[in-house]
Image (tube, rainbow over all chains, first blue to last red; front, top):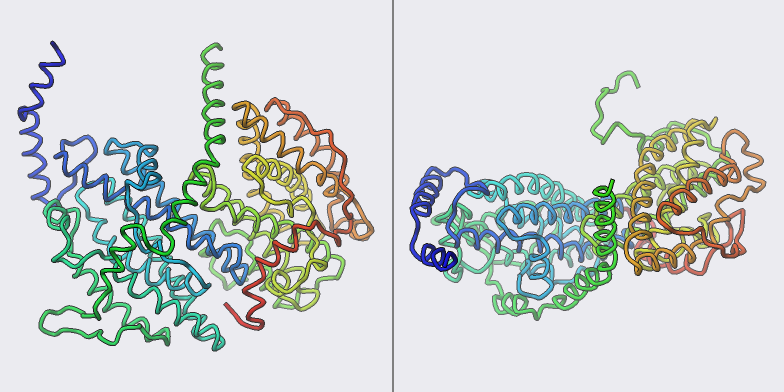
Length: 327
Length: 275
């Protein structure tokens, strides 16, 4: 009987819901922040869980292409820097999982969604890191694109997300500079090194541009996210801004971008670039990129191989708790 | 020195590999024996770091990706300082030594060369090496060689955490589940034949009285610490024969060749290049 009453009550918006919605609308209108204990529309919560966990998964999967070069880094200093960088990515993942947990979805569940292929991560990490110069290109272009995407997220309406992004952006900007520095060193090195750098830029340019997501005309979730002050700029705006930035920086590197259509449009105030291969984007998104299978297999393997360790830690903690209770 | 700002942009104002390099550049003289000793310390740290770095993105938990990565990072730092110092005797840089020596030029111990195996074996190896390094560095801080003492002082603070990490995991694996007990036991058995080499004295150690720490002196405190941890974890000290190794550390396990092939490949493809 009690259950039935509750179900009936939930079907109609309660006075509490209405007050919550009013408060929520006010916060959004004021461009202020929603905190974990605040009322929020279910769709807002879901959108955030999807976006934040996808971001966290990207950090975790994104460790793999770079970890691919830790054991082969060509100097001890570079090895140390790369290790520290990949470690930062793990830290970002943890940070974002924790922020997502404040919305009521535990890390285990999020991880399970990743392992079962129900949750996405950034497609860029489904491209291989074939050469050392890729450590530079990933830092400069991939982290660079991530920063362009993420800096506006520091003002996201959901408090824990915005605050997590502040710290993450600081570290990412450091990562971008180290990537740039790797490429600069290579570009000023031997002809073989310079060629390695150019090849990496050639391979990562288009995938990095696609990190901003589909064009505005083809981005179904963007509008609602912008209305909720989660997203601040459209995909194309951010992409254009990024192109403007890197076309300047590439000159300092003494390298070129593999795109002869880059130009500044005085009328729109936007940077334009060549056509991107959106068929490829959708192929990779659908799981048919060069490394999708490999990345997921590695994550699953790590998870499965580590099961006995996590079980041991849990069993140990339980034994300790029981002993403490007896004492 | 006096003109320098007291504040340096480096974590904790720690003694860095670059500080050793600066001393070398200012004409610091390093004798061959001291260099040979520094090679042993540096190579153990380097090979261990190379092994541990593999775990990043493969560990049982994200927290362990970070922890093992951190330990590897600390060890790389120690390796860079020791190798920079050693290299001064022969006009070589840390990278010359790391990337352009063959197996017979390395002075690493069999223990650090052992493959990672599963998490149980990695923790077993970590327990041995971190307890050993802790005993070693806590004495090396009193070395008559100021540089070795300074590197040891920094390393000691970090190895203290490594030892605690290894201990905490040994307790959890030993006293966790049957499976974890089986695996950590197997890990300990697997690395134990190579423990004895760490504690062997040789002529070099004799010649470096006051500079080097006598390895044999570390055995007793090592055994005591290990015995206490294993007892608390419900584990036993493995009763397995010592492997025939090499107290002067010129001979190596079969594993080292593969490790170096991977570590050195890119640098050797581009001799003379800077990165």
